[in-house]
Amino acid sequence: MADVRIQGLKKSFGPVEVLKDIDLEVEDGAFVVLVGPSGCGKSTLLRAVAGLEPVSAGLITIGGRTVNDLPPAQREIAMVFQSYALYPHMNVAANMGFGLKFAGTPKDEIARRVAEAARILQLEPLLKRRPRELSGGQRQRVAIGRAIVRKPQVFLFDEPLSNLDAALRINTRVELAKLHRLLSATIIYVTHDQVEAMTLADKIVVMNHGRIEQQGKPLDLYYRPANLFVAGFIGSPAMNFLEGRVLSEGGLDIGEGQRLPVPTHGLAAGSNVTLGVRPEHMRIAAAAEVQTSLHLSATVDIIERLGESGFAHLRLRQERLMIAEIRGETGLKPGDRAVAVLDPEHLHLFDAGGQRIG
Image (cartoon, rainbow, N blue to C red):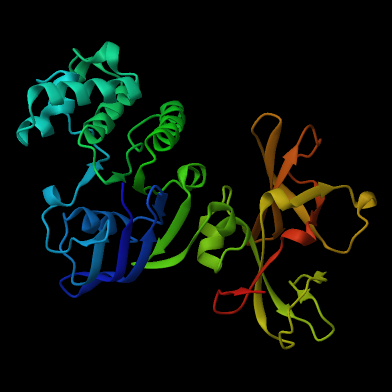
């Protein structure tokens, strides 16, 4: 396997700049996931690494070798797309070995590599079947097997699970994690699903409008998001945000007569800030149980049950909603008054420009 280094990468389609000064290092054997909303540039970045999109400026190296001017076939990469792109008239074995056959690899070597990939992916009983005889998950495994047999330096995945149903997504996600561990493969993986990102990645790269907003270990981004965009994108349900104003005596005025005694990190009185808190860091309590002033008074809007756990959607005022995690039977129902206690160890403060404070 090999590392991938991207320096000062830019890509424009006519006057529209879709990648803006991208700097990224993918260590040898790492599983790096690119996430972000549709149109943020993550798939374009992956295609640039693959050689499917020429770049406007910058440098791409794979295993220490500059590949900007090399065609895809010479970059020693393998790409797995959202669509399986299997040949319907070929069986599984032929589909997996077609690229090797096209490259002139000897038949016995093709057979050996296909057998090895089939064993890894548990496809051995399916080698004689055609794609129409396979489930969606099996087809995706064949597409992954086709990549494995090429023994590339880097695997590139472009939203490979988006065509699968929920149960298959979970199963295939587990298989991908096992595959990465087994092969010690260098993987760059694109998805819009942050659950996939959190569960698969060694490093997450959050993109927005063609730029990298933040990159790092999944829990680093989760617990210390660099800005409002990352804080709102990472986590499900999304982080709650409250706009407030710094008080001269300290703490925040969040309106409706509610004040929260949170650290303001020396900000000037009157400064506008945003307080963030995740649903799992809010606890619903009876008013008589509240022993701290770090709480919010709200009205229950709706209860969302997910079995033992769930979420209470709270309304602080007409246009302001927050979500708190609940566990067990609470007896709450829409219209009830509730108190949400905030965990002081897990509060996030952002300045008027959306950047993290502290």
